[in-house]
Image 1: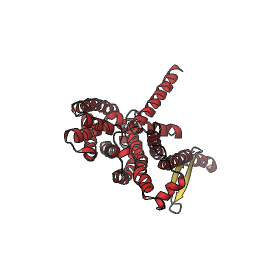
Image 2: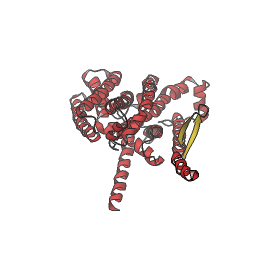
Image 3: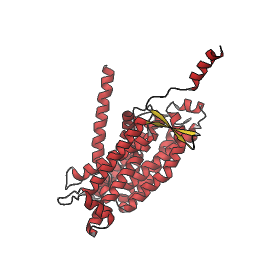
Image 4: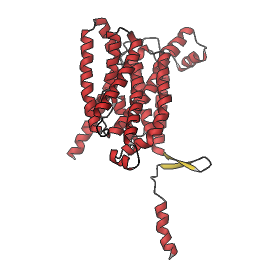
Length: 366
């Protein structure tokens, strides 16, 4: 009789995990880490693609005769090549590759934060207006204050953070509602875009051309000094995001469900918004507004891993891969002319949105 009653209890205590899930013992077996094999493999493949494209990008040039074989690229780092080759590879090409990898990861993570909070695939910094706010700050610095590219970096950072605060305060009413946040962000973004156009029209032609080029991504102007703030932002904000991730996962079930599970929703939302705005603002301040990476990367990561929520590590890998590939295409597609990287990311984002609309229409028709 006792054995008959013990069996159900044993079944209850042993949850059935999917076959793709494994547990890794930590700390002498006292704790276990859950690992999703599909997510791990896909993230590893994306990392390999990113490394391969980065190495290729270090060797390929935008003009005839500027291509370098792999051994000469390695020699530039080892110091066995001429100073001219070292300047081309280490000082010219490496900074833009590093910013593409680190900045792409930052944008992807920022998009994941906002899409999780709003529970909407359109809830990204591009749509909500933070990117437009950063562009406004840069234009004011360049066209109104005459501070040039250096001032544009600080102006973009201030503009992005100020826009984030404005959207948060205007959308704040008994907590943050995802739909309200997006609607408020779209409204602010529309006003900022109109103001940006006004600034460009009133500026001198040469200054307007420089500012417009910055507004499409300025990877050609990047140097090692520009890599530092992007790297530092990740060093500071990634641990904060890791601490906030359990609370963020609760928002996937809805704000009411998160609150019922003990999450201080108001504080968690504010801190997550602060981290998300910081990630996108620093990258935009350094490299200029880069469209669609934050919008596309989380959704692509979720679909290729078939995860119920947005996988953060895979999202960072997708963002890095997309931006480093986009930068390589921008440099080589119409060589010797170099396209702004924002043109390529916008084209990729347009293809993604078109495919998404077609897929949704087929679901409705079915």
